[in-house]
Image 1: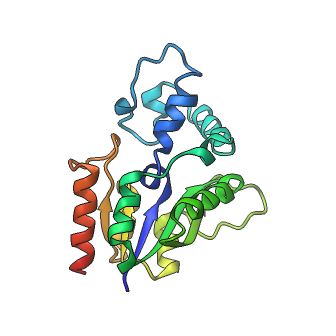
Image 2: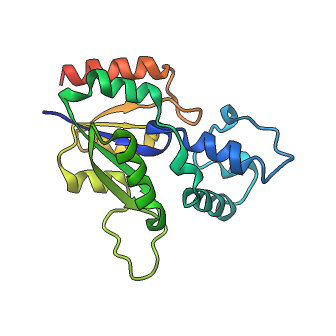
Length: 195
């Protein structure tokens, strides 16, 4: 049975859009950008803020109650309900340690019928916390079970492709995907069937 690894933020949910709408934009009232204008991730340059300011805002939002209340991506959930039982599924997120448990709880609450594993690549480690993986490529090399990665980051997909993992680019304003979400998930079903 093939194993599909799913990115969490901006694939299983609308994290960036939620953060931007509820925290990022309100804290900068002069900002005239829309979510579709976020053509880079991380978006600090596009938003006209420093990287530390962006990361501080994002990290504070991650540990607030709001992300726990985010709804799952309905198109992905529908795909899993229709096609998911033929594969094993795992979620993989890159985030600071203090919000990793929040993300895992959210994933299992909304996707636990299908997603049975959760991996995390810790970012911005505190002193004394071991660094096992630099990025998702390192994690996937260690894990050794992934056949397909679904992610919105082309950098993560390049690292996975170097390991022989088949890749599906989930469309977001900051990547080069020219497909709709539905087209992407239809191609995932075809992709998985032909593997």
